[in-house]
Image (cartoon, rainbow, N blue to C red; front, side, top):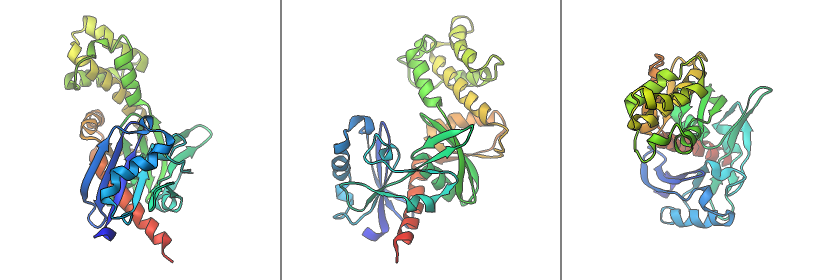
Length: 303
């Protein structure tokens, strides 16, 4: 059974997520999550923490490990290259970096796009985008990967040909918890759909994003926007602005690759513009992407 298994790790700035996977079916056999992201560990702690978390899955080191995400950055365990787009899974598989201090473990490269008027980088989302492509059984797609730094990736002929990063999630957190307009929302949980839809409408204001965000304050004082709806309004403004910035770029259909909660919000924003949506859970996409990468890696290592 060992040869039918692999371990996929998505290790970011804030979280560690690991999955034991049946590579034949793509089924997740077990999983582990913690808040031991890059911020929580020093450089010399990475191999020890990873080995301890995965020890009972590894069968003496025979089950391979593939690590994606910020773990491969200069701030992580070991820096892996960022390959220039366009790039496919074969390119990533050919540039895997052995994880120092852990046998049969590799760190996945990220991607970059370098143009005269557009420079961008990603780590981890490329695996999810390729995984979404595999799950949908296609070689061409536009993927939106919501998160702290949302990514919009375009894939063609099985290769990721370009992408754009939007700081939507990080800006939402900053505005909600560190500005006057977000003050009424503090101490409250969840996103109110009514407030979110008001924010989507406000995102179209001709005065632009900076004014639309301030309307959370004005509407709370004089427009009937309750404190329970302020967080939703801010989310709607920011996600709505992100979607507006991407419209008209040949997105006849968008694959959303995220958590169920974020996918729901982005679906509402896209459907408000009559853009068809397919939802893919980000964990499923990660597993599918790592399985596809491992197949190419092993093929490339055979004599």
